[in-house]
Image (cartoon, rainbow, N blue to C red; front, side, top):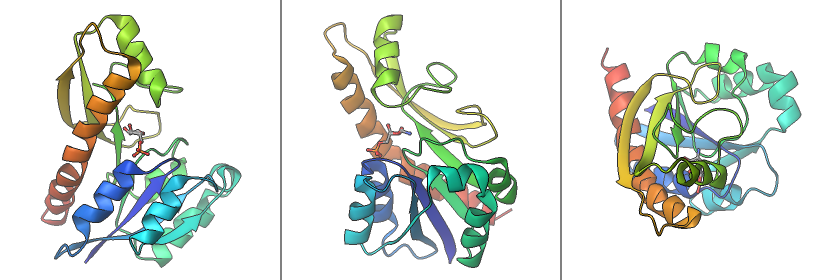
Length: 193
Ligand code: GRF
């Protein structure tokens, strides 16, 4: 089995889609969820689906990343999927899982990415820019926000009458549709190397 950890800070709809997709998967298992905000809805979602959860605070991530790395290694984690994880992944974690951390971003990177570009901020910027399309990107995680190699993108239209939340809802559907499949293909491709 390939063991996967999800990192999330928020409501967790992508985390839930991933957990459901990999339930009963023959070779890939979502082993645990790591979250960094005690009130994050994702914790309950994961627990209801039978996934072990573990809290690390923002300051533990930032000043004691080895704690997180040791925990992941102890749990035999092979890959990490970020799903609405708002902290920059510390160097120690990135370097302990080379090319084994994926993130999903709700825009067509490199547009509308980087620090502060999360949640509704992204869709507000898309609307302000007058872009006729937007979408989602799945990319490898490196030491900067939203900068790693792009593995997959999928686009959708932006209509003049769209509100920010219309755009957000359209993009989120694409995310739920693609993240599990792309993660599955990517993990398999690395394992077969
Ligand atoms: C998604 O839009 C994802 O692209 C971004 O954070 C959001 C998380 O939403 N990284 P959810 O918590 O999965 O609903």
